[in-house]
Image 1: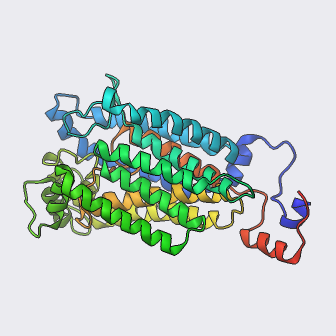
Image 2: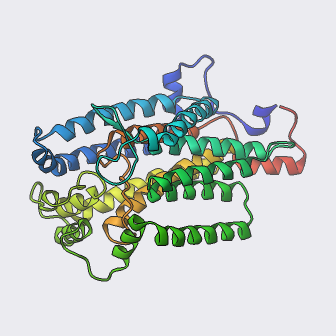
Image 3: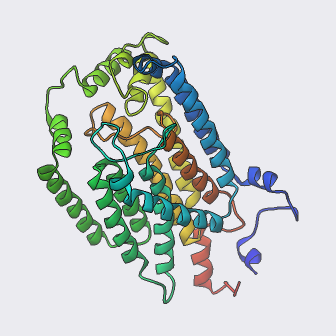
Length: 394
C-alpha cells in the first residue's frame, strides 16, 4: 500500500549494499567534503611547518598527523553514511552517552594544555576534546526526543531536550568554552523551530541568550576580554586578530603566491582557528570564495533533500547536523574577518585537529546517511494524501 501511494525507487531485489549506497548518496555533497579535506591539506603544508619548527619537530609533522586523522575521518564518514536512520539513531545515542560522561569528568581528569580552558583529555600520543563528539550525538538525541514528543501519548520530548541543553551548556561554559556552547544552543534552536516552536517562545529564548551573555561578560574575565577586543575600534597589530586582518588585506584577490605568505610565522593558531587567513594571504579571495561555496553547497543541498523527508526524526536530525556544520564554518571565517568576537572554533574539515576531523567525519557521515534517497514521496504528498483520505494502514 505504501508503494502504491508514495511510489518507490527502482531497485532490484537483493541489491548489494555498496551499489545501493552509491545510487542513493548525495554525490555533490560527498565531493565537496573530500575537496574541503584536500584544501585543508594544501593549507596545512603552508601553515604548519613554522609551528613544527618552533616545537623542534619535522617540517611536515602536523601535515602527516592531519593526513592520518583526515583519512580516518573520511573512512568513518563513508561507513556511517551506509547506515539506516535507525542505526544512525542508535549510534548517536551511544555516542552522546559516552561523550556526555567524558564532558562531565573533564574538571577531574582533563587538561588545559596551558590555554586556560579545561577542554581536553591527554592520551600522551594525542588529545581528545569531548565537546566535538558531543555535538552530533546531542543533535541525534534531541531529534529523537522531539520526534517522539510529536506522537500521540508521546513523552515530553521538547522539555527533556531543553533540560539536556541547559546541562550541556552549563558544562561547556564552566570550561570555559562559550563558542561550543553557542553552537550547541544554535543547533537545538534550529531543531526546535523546525519541530514547530511558537515564535514567542523563540523570542524568549533569544532574551535568555542575551541575559546569559551579559552574565558571562560581568563574571568571566576570559569572555569579557574577547568581547572588549572585538568592540575596540583599533586592532592591535601584534595580536592574532591583527595578524589575520593584515594577512587578508595583503592577499588581495589572487594572493601573494604559494609559500610567500608571512602570517603563518606570526600566528600561533594559523593551522587551526585562523587557517582561512593563510588561505586569503597566499591564494587570495578567489580560494576563500571557493571554500565558502563548498560549505554553502553542503549545507543547502542537505537542507533541500531534507525538505522531501517525511520522517520527523530524519528531518530534524539532518537539519540540526547541516545547520551546525554551516554555522561553525560561518563563525570561524567571521572571526577571521572580525565580524564576530574570537571563539576558538575550527573550520570543519579544513583546520588541523584530530578530534575536530574525526568528530566532523561522524557528523557528516550521519548527515549523508539521513539525506540518502529513500522510497518515499515528498512531505507535501503525505499531507495531500491525508487530506484526500487516500492513506491506508501501512
